[in-house]
Image 1 (cartoon, rainbow, N blue to C red):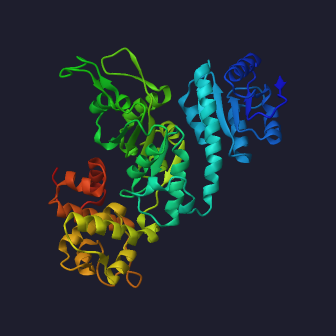
Image 2 (spheres, helix red, strand yellow):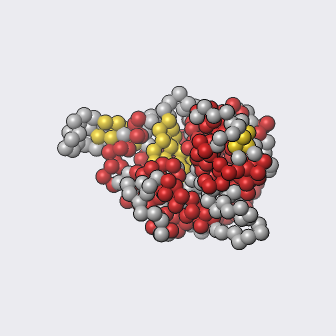
Image 3 (tube, helix red, strand yellow):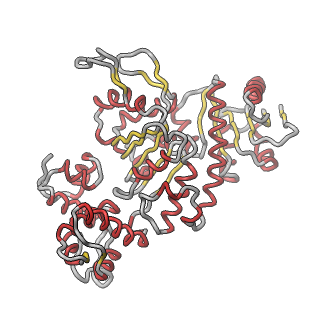
Length: 464
């Protein structure tokens, strides 16, 4: 069977089951979606794709002559921008992960639910348009081209690399896509997540920020799913979990890679089904939240090492924004320093209104392993030490890791890992070994800090 409508259509459906093709066509047309091209022979797909340049292709996994996975690879090799959805009669996790690795947008299991089918189609077409727009951002970007520049006023930035980040955030915000924001600790990932929320259609709803490294197996379900009265000893009243509390808004999952592997499957199910059961309840609760997740780790490395589920990552990673570290944003260092100088001088009633020239030069040389958060901490502490009206290098140098005079291009450089170790050590010493307080200042979870202490070793004896 092969059916091609007279008018151009963005959708191609491929399945050897002619009855299913007709059913999908009826569902789409009745929902106001353009009539799709239908074909039952997988060998015809590439010719049709080259001729019509579709936005979305539905592929049956098992077909005579050539299977859907092979066709998916061919499409993505020649037309990587086309969104593809694999349809199969078998709910197999390994096949789903493989399809996502090859670039599939989603993986649906027969029998197809009409409502879910329409949702997937609309979101896939929306993502196609979004990605086409984001492709334009590969070129050099300008802050002057932002449609909502006022939304970014709290993120001090003049470097072009951040203009790209702002444009990406502005483009994805109006959609309902889940977003993964990656970047080192202290780069402003949560601030960017809040901006995405404020620019979204959910801006009137709540914004909940949750550190995923803070939840053990026993706490996770109760905190995220909630419970009914009497669900367990001590449950004296019903409680909404984070998913219900954030209904209509955005749930920010910080340090997503810190979530225990045993809990990742529970999170994935909720994201896939958009529903959950409270502890102690048999009633399904609908989940209506937009997910923004963040990580300061190499998530692909975590997947390869078996610490993070690939299928969860592909579900979350509908759009990816990478926030560059401060050392790659040299134009931002002095504007940020002056911004924090103004804030903390006012807060501490100090009449300090500028940076000395030698301090400005030293800040530009410093790699800031703790990024923006470290820069603010340095400025806040230096203002307390400064006696004059100009912030000088002498008030700051003791706060900088690896701050020996002349240390730079003419002397031996140290690795970023060593810089990170020095900074963590300095913060721990300042907090008298209190890990909880040190983690808060460093802007990372307690478990992350404990892991780094274990890796680096030879750090101050620390307490909770």
